[in-house]
Image (cartoon, rainbow, N blue to C red):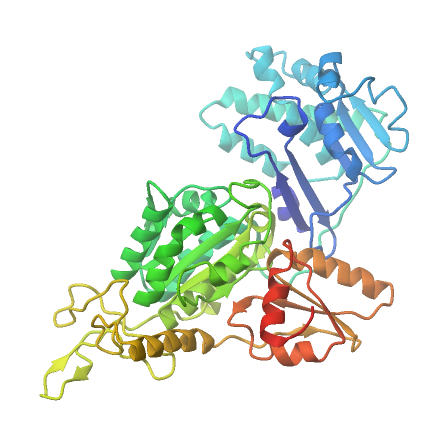
Amino acid sequence: TSETASFGNDLSTLPNFPAEIRAPAGTLPGVSSFQLHFADHDILTPGDAPNVLVAMNPAALKANVADLPRGAEIIVNTDEFTKRALQKVGYDTSPLQDGSLEGYHVHPVPLTTLTVEALKDFDLTRKEAERSKNMFALGLLSWMYHRPTEGTEAFLRSKFARKPDIAAANIAAFRAGWNFGETTEDFAVSYEVAPAAKAFPVGTYRNISGNLALAYGLIAASRQADLPLFLGSYPITPASDILHELSRHKNFGVRTFQAEDEIAGIGAALGAAFGGSLAVTTTSGPGVALKSETIGLAVSLELPLLVVDIQRGGPSTGLPTKTEQADLLQAMYGRNGEAPVPVIAPRTPADCFEAALEAARIALTYRTPVFLLSDGYLANGSEPWRIPDPQELPDLRVQFATSPNHTLDDGTEVFWPYKRDPHTRARPWAIPGTPGLEHRIGGIEKQDGSGNISYDPANHDLMVRTRQAKIDGIQVPDLTVDDPHQAPTLVLGWGSTYGPITAAVRRLRTAQIPIAQAHLRHINPFPPNLGEVLARYDKVVIPEMNLGQLATLIRAKYLVDA
């Protein structure tokens, strides 16, 4: 992937691994894979039908062969096709000999034997030498696709800098794989995929995953806001990488706190928001359930807080390493009382950077918690990302309250924590310890303006409506619609379905079928022109990785039977 990115291809990846700490080796539940799709043009998904499968054992072959189109290449490690390994996954006879793979180009390669032979001059045990067989396979694939090799060798030297013998062995195995492709007569064809020069605007690009882009976006937001970044988090798949990455950036004033549980993580983050930090908590669906009371507290306190939900399959523990986008209604309504929270969703791994900046803009401007809904597919997938010029980034600086803002009837100047900005309805943000700005906070209902505790029903009605009006009044851009042929049908999506939807739309247009497409980033509040857009089409189709949660929201608000 790294070599392909540096070569200038467009790319999309799909890591796929089991949730178990160690599923039994050689069984179907234990199969993990990494899929890479690259091209000389703009691509949007990791693809449905791989052209090449490298099967390290029978389980890998059985788990993935159904995805391959007829005529695809299969490279199998014949050393692993033992009678016991075949029986483990239910093969009565070897698929390499029973004719079941006749529709494919099968390349039987004794990867383990060749790797051990290539490393016989190194002072390694056989088990240590066998570990390098993936580098042999990588060398063979690099030869097949004319990938550059310098970056891979440099990576191995860096990765194993403290173990130069291991680095040298891996490089030797990598080169042996390349040379095997060059010299064997089994591979009659190699492929050249030119750089995707026309697919990208001019700029400096790097390969980036969604979680890494999100972490960088949060750091950029804190710098643009001139606020320290605080992350209160508890490790959970697939969000933990954000905690790992942010912990490396103390030089940017980032503080990371690994709490003892989900509730402590968001509690610390909300405390940091009270103290004047750009506060973030990261989690996945099960963690959001635990954080819901504190999110409601953040709504009541009206403090900026970013709640990053990297969605995974549910309910309950569900599918920890598999993707789903089924937390939308939880983000919208998963709290007691009327507790509206803005919701935004990135569309691609690289877009997670922009989404983080936008979430920070809304949280800081309107003094509200904000949900950012990514998912495992975006978090772990990767694509090229143009590194932005710092001058392109938005100015997110905020003004803290510094003096009293209200005069009582007797002429006394006091600080009212719930006196609002007339444009944004945001309340002032007063840092604890600022002389004269002492004020009460907490989860019990506040009196409008003064912030005193109030059980008055008319005041509660006013505060409920004011908090809702603040969210409804958030300025978000109009929805853009891609409709070159005035189509009768609109395909509307949100989040990570952008790639598959856009790929499908392209196929339909190639087949001369008119189709319109629009993709939502802002889900609460919706873009102001969404109702007018929906009314233009005879039919609205909403593909999403759930049973129709966005469709439910669209039906509720616009009476459109999507």
